[in-house]
Each structure stands twice: as C-alpha cells, then as structure tokens.
Length: 98
Image (cartoon, rainbow, N blue to C red; front, side, top):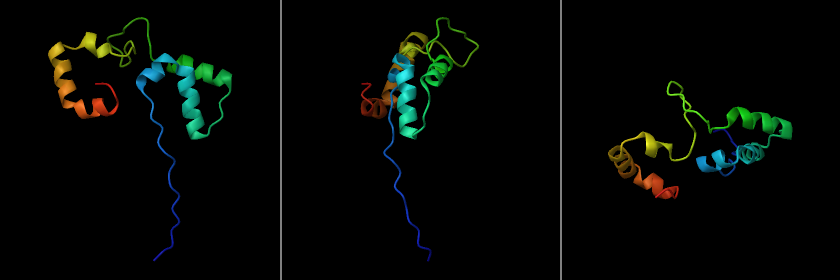
C-alpha cells in the first residue's frame, strides 16, 4: 500500500451574486485573495470593466441580460416564480433568500 499524505483543501469561498453586482472591484479582490493571486489595481479595474454584470440596455439575443438582481421577477410569470420558489425552497432558505 502506498503512503499518501493528504493536504486538506482550504475552506470554500462563498459569495453572493448581490455582492458581485454591488461592488465588482471588491468581488475580484476577494477572489484574488482567496486564490492567493496578486492583481494590480489597474488590472482589477480592467477586469471589473469587462466583467461588470449590470447593463444599461437589455439585448434579448444575448446570454447576458441586464445583470440586475431580481430581474427574473420582471421577466417571468408570477406562477413560474412561485413554482421555482417552491422547488428551490431549501436552497433559497440555506442562502437566506427566503
């Protein structure tokens, strides 16, 4: 039998989409720190500009929509939102969305 030493993985980084849309720079800094990657402020600014999720106009042909939190409420039928909330209730409660 082989002797294997196991190195435990670091605790996971949990971030919410709202954190991302509210402060993209800080979000990138958090992820970089978690990954132990150095990024200059200029690099963070450039990444934030490219990765900013919020758009001023909605392009229906694009995968990326407005990026605003809760957009699904305006885009989906109320009955669909209710069904999704019921199906995903455990996950939504776990992440404090209910």
